Figure 1 (tube, rainbow, N blue to C red):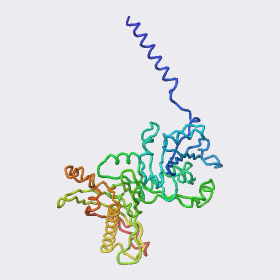
Figure 2: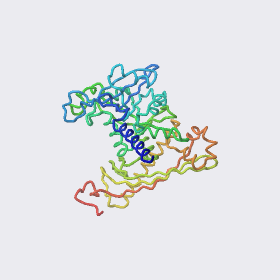
Figure 3: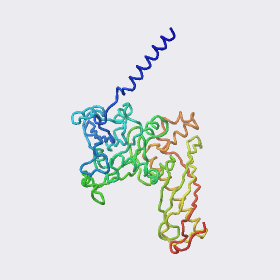
Figure 4: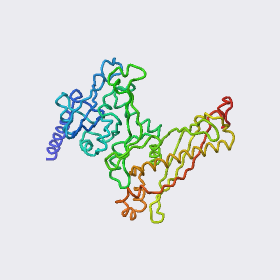
Length: 402
């Protein structure tokens, strides 16, 4: 009897293994799919215009001559994102495949109307991985932003994706917002989302392959400014300098540079921020919320355009004080700008929610008004560590003693 049961068990296992080894029932061949790299979402009248940038696999190789673009853009208008995407089947023989989606771009009208509705499909669809970036295009359509041809990468969406990641690490005014970050912030009390802005230059000449065959390229894009949201709606913009305050306060700065007026002489000096850490310290003063920003920054002097002897301790200390004052002004101006717009993008409310939950319960329904009047103090510990290989711009042969 045991031998019989063992034989039956072995047979069942063999059948199951054969079923698995024959392939996946839901698998799709590459020649049956259009791999979507970017989606542009515009508002046109009462509808959405959805534009998808898809890969043409036969033109992916860098060794092939660039006779045609490696990507194709399809556009459809519909009341919802889902309808528009299904409607693509009327002009494409392949099903849209979203697992490699890298970028979703909104035009400004859609962002001001609200991005929750068009994003709902992407959050729900099982094929979409929640690791794509989001941005708002300024002065152009999202369709334009996914249509032009870029010179650096074969795939335009990948070019923008990589450029935003690099820019966030090396240039503080930009912020690479992942859809996970947006979703997490939307569930928190006391913090509002942001999205980076994109501008396109000289677009009318850059929608063909001629854009990558000339130098300089006709069209290029620039990540600039931060779009400030209230809930899922864009309500204002912060300029480049003000955007730096956001990345500093949210500890998103890996490295950045700044040009500062030389103390007591004409010209500027440039510092490279190596590390900056900001602690948000919420307090209650006279029964009202109060924020202290405790900042610890380390930087190098990267360039000096004025007559200054950095071996002189007083001169070096003056440079350090000027750099400290410059950062303090950036932080204060950025906070003031967000207060004027009326959106707590820094998470000050969340800090009070953690530290003073009872008070936050009383304040949260009126937090916009509280935030606009919130007193924010800035305390900075600033250190300039190195002066480079020279201590005077007029004596390049003289080396520092570091």
